[in-house]
Length: 246
Image (cartoon, rainbow, N blue to C red):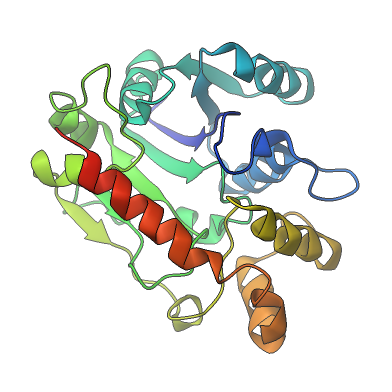
């Protein structure tokens, strides 16, 4: 397959364990929302998870309920898992969706996937709402980085690898609605779960992200449920990057 959607997810998490299978609404788990929204992109979907026993339950659930591919690879080394997934399915370009970002904007992915003429990958601007977009990445970018992500490396934070390999990265342009807002739409803490559960009661699982953001802008008090966690989340990312030796 030349193009694919890769959902990156695993069950182990230090802050909210097994969150990928956590119940969000009455009828949906986190993985259900991710796959349902990914289907809107209309490309083959691959769940890229790990070989660890803790992810057996996730794989069994997805196999039972969905007709999508599953790739099982390294636990900590996310980049190596992606690279092997690219090789196995002969992918030239992948739309990467983080398993934490259950209400990601599938419309942005569809629109931006055509904008890679001058770049090896595309990422979100730093002032974009967390949880709406991860990356679009080419096989060329993965090949450039492969010499730097050794087997034992934790590659959760990929920015150092991008810089080290001199990957040509572009930053997507998005509607101002998604910029500089005190809104957090990712699932990493119990406070995030509270907000996402509330959103699931107000919207269908495949609702347009713009409508979700407009709702939160109008009801600013709701973002107070979890936005204070953004600082903790960013600090945690910074610590991981500083401790990384490539």
